[in-house]
Length: 400
Ligand SMILES: *Cc1c(COP(=O)(O)O)cnc(C)c1O
Image (cartoon, rainbow, N blue to C red; front, side, top):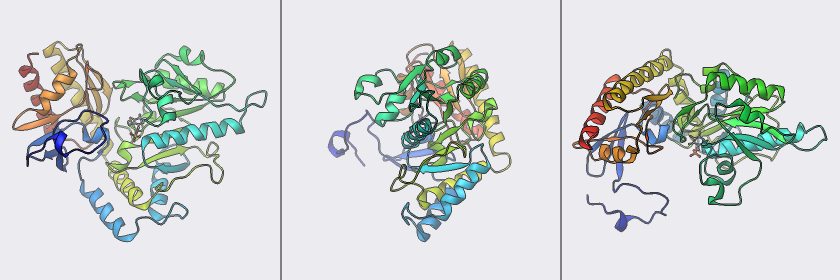
């Protein structure tokens, strides 16, 4: 099959894509329209928690599709109740609202915090609505979540922004303290900044934030769209720092590849009234049945330990590779890791890795001086070794 982007493509332009059509996926592997295979360290952008088309997802989709796809969000359905039970049993939260994307879950978190800020006003009885977020954070692509994000350039791209988001510096508690006003209602952050370049918030910072927000009667919101669902080796990344947040959002891994996201809150925070939050597809049984199937795999004995072990292994091998090539080391948590290149060769590596023959390698460079690794959580040691050897080939090829 011949494929030319300009001829076939009526899709709206939003980004540059290689002239490839991907046709099949299985585990850590994907195949394009020419039959070429790729070792996939993107996994749908840290989405395919169990790799491409795992049996448990295929089974859950097939069985649920035959039973009931869409009863309407005005009615209860069994898979959404089951998944909400599983999520609350395995976290510090009591209530779940399902959404279809990370951005939508974060919109829900922002709405819930503002609602809570009306019920818990400042000393003069005025609504509290300001949310402190962080430089280089990423919370989604709706107007409100873009406004919450600290991505350079996003403040002017679709101006005017939604007001009420002030940006602090990650791992700098005084930068947060400085921004607190009478109007502040919450602090919102990613436990590991993903799109910003895999930058973990330190345990001390997370614990400091929890203390500070409690003292000031503010909500602590963790955006675990990328870090949740086992990515860091804990089921949720807030567990790495032994804190109890008030609100959490999930996306990406929760659906294992299908559109599913969630907003979770503790009982006393979950204060929406009838009609204030909803959505046509929210909590539909087809997606929530998949979410439950994925979560049951993650909860199997030894699964999260194996994420930790493989993360450790990947980390130590990346350090060896870094030493050998004079790079600047690596960082991350669990199976969300970045190699610090020290020079802006990331995009060149990404392209050369994809063009390797006969087998290509798919990796990501969130910043030009970084490579990001987000394999499936059940990646094997062999698939890590194979990736490292392919990466060495690429570095040789481009002269590093
Ligand atoms: C990907 C991501 C989002 C946005 O999720 P979508 O499903 O693309 O809307 C939000 N927050 C974080 C931390 C993310 O990594």
